[in-house]
Amino acid sequence: MKVDVRHAPSFAVARCVLGSGEKVKVEAGAMSAHSSGMSLEAKMEGGVLKGLKRSVLGGESLFISTYTAPAQGGWVDVAAKLPGDLRVIELNGSTSWIIERGNWLASEDGVDVDTKWGGFKSLVGGEGGFMAHASGIGKVIVASYGAIDTISLAAGETVVVDTSHMLAFPDTVTYDLRRAVQGRSIQSVKSGEGLVFEFTGPGDILTQTRNQAQLIAWLNTELGARE
Image 1 (spheres, rainbow, N blue to C red):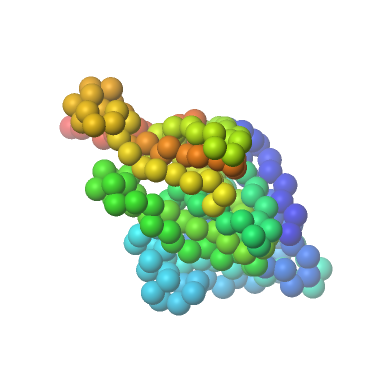
Image 2 (cartoon, rainbow, N blue to C red):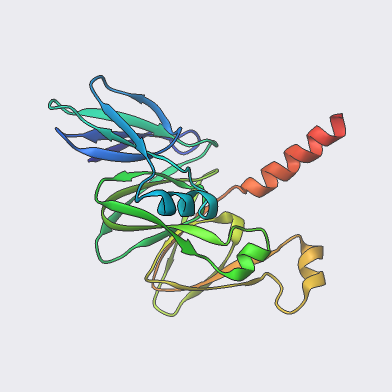
């Protein structure tokens, strides 16, 4: 599969170009257009239990749409719900990636998308608890709200990222989930910061420049003021 990204970084759309019989898995509702002759199958990937796990716990749709190209090949355009950029991650079979819930958009047929426990603190803090886990061989497309920044960590190097701005990271990095201000809950409230990831390299951390939770909070405030 070849991926061409257009309209980046603000309103990115990815065109997945497929050869004869090639398949692409797409998040339900993410397809914006496709060439003629493509066949579509929507199902709970991996069975009912895995589909429920991915949906209820991982923040993704219950069903995954699989598009298969006809003999002459074809293409599928995919786009995210919120304005922002897209990034194509190449999986080589030895390194898997952890993706923040709701940010997986599409992947090749050789990629398995499951759900990974992100830490009890994230569940209690309302930050998610579970994240998508992509493994196998092939391309994975992740979507951000806003632009995508890459933080490259050397072995032993650390960085702190707000949970709402984390997008994706490889399993070569280790992480700890903690309060932004350690041991001082009142200071976390005063600063407006909650939970953060502390990553240790080596590996590349992908972050998004905008925060969906802040957007939702702002919309609720504005809509509530107009009632």
